[in-house]
Image 1: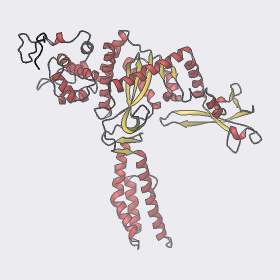
Image 2 (image 1 turned 30 degrees about the vertical axis):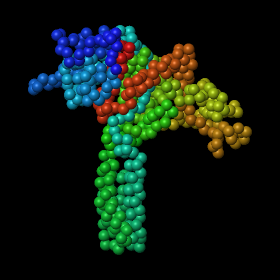
Image 3 (image 1 turned 90 degrees about the vertical axis):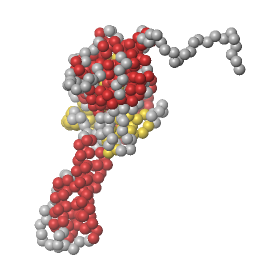
Image 4 (image 1 turned 180 degrees about the vertical axis):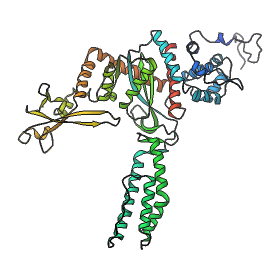
Amino acid sequence: MPCKSNIVFKDYSPKQNLLFPPNLEELISENHPVRVVNRIIDGINIDGLLSSYKGGGTSSYHPRMLLKVIIYAYLRNIYSSRNIEDALKENIHFMWLSGMSRPDHNTIFRFRSKRLKEQIKKIFTQVVELLVSEGQISLKEAYIDGTKIEANANRYTFVWGNAIKSSKEKIQKQLKDLWVYVEKVYKDEEKELNTPDFEEITPEKVDKAIEQINEALKDKKISKEIKQKLRYASQNWPDKLKEYQEKEEILEDRSSYSKTDQDATFMRMKDDHMQNGQLKPGYNVQISTNNKFITCYTLEQTTTDTTTLPAHLQSFYDSFGLYPEAVIADSGYGSEENYDILEANQITPFVKYNYFHSEGTKKWMTKNQFRPEYLHYNEEQDCFYCPMGQQMQKIGTTIKETKTGYKQQLTLYQAQNCNSCPMKGVCHKASKNRIIEVNHNLRKHKQRVKELLTSEKGIKKRKQRAYDVEGTFGELKNNKAFKRFMLRGKEKVSVEFGILAIAHNLSKISA
């Protein structure tokens, strides 16, 4: 059907040559985020990055240009080096930022994973200090939390510490059973046998034990089954134990790792809004925020947040030469060791302990009214009073050591006459007089923390934490769709998160 004569269309000639080619500068708006990235990265010192180039040979792409391109790519949710390469050919913002340079994906990958390894934290710190100087954030308060992000690793190629332990115990038991057989063979002979060392299962000791058993049974008539067991043990167990040793060295204090990224630990990931999930290889990312800007980040291989705080605070201090004046965190960080560290560095601890929200409820008090922390304590006489008002005398102290090596001092108090007490059944289940263990140091910390958290200032900070740091993780995982790392290995993954953190902060400036 022909067009109506009164309709007028704008000229459309895609193949028409231009007398003057367009200037990319004119095509980018003044307040576009790409200009923010360009301005901020132009203002930071990259001497450390420049010194990593040896010189000689063919010319290299300028590291400042590559840094801008990668940060802007992460700001635009582009994480693959191949996709960044495509953007440099197709997107006018990337073309303008790179000055029409077109590094390929291998160059981008090498720069990101190798050149930035020693420098990204320094670059991130400079960006944060710039934000502080502009008054956008403060380093006085740190809202701290952690989240688990999946590693770039196969979910089904795993190694479990408990499985290795179980296999070693199985070898140990079978060795002992073989020696029991030797002793049965020699039970009628008056011959002294040298019992092998079965307590420490190492390749060398197992090899020696098998050799001893073979020597002891050399001229004896033994069953076919025992011969097969000894042959299998000799051929397989020493090599298996060497393999277990290598795996344990990789594990260190962890419970698991992935074979395709040995730095990644299997962690339970929350996959949906109902928090249903499964075990996947990943990293525990810890961040400090202020006004929803990231001020510090660390990566851990542990599945819980409790032990991550000391290293995170040290990283904060290493970056800025000071500690925050206040730390606001949830109950995952509420341990005695963490409270001691905060107190030692004069940091106000707005850090919940594990039952902070529960202890005021009727259900909690009904179930836990006889817990030691709810018994009356007489500081002058250093004694507690049981629910019936009877004195509980101090009987000694004991030391417990946590997995991190931190030593807790516990004081023991014992009741005097529980047998005739009408409340014995509900107060405690022990057959003798009740003994309680009290950690006075932790008790003191919890009293102070409770006062801080229930104050007007504390309530305000608790509300701010949920918005500040949890909101930041929401932006990274949902708005920026960053739920899985692209690189492998803790060092490279740390570089990648550093780029993401810079991109997040610059996106907040340009918002």
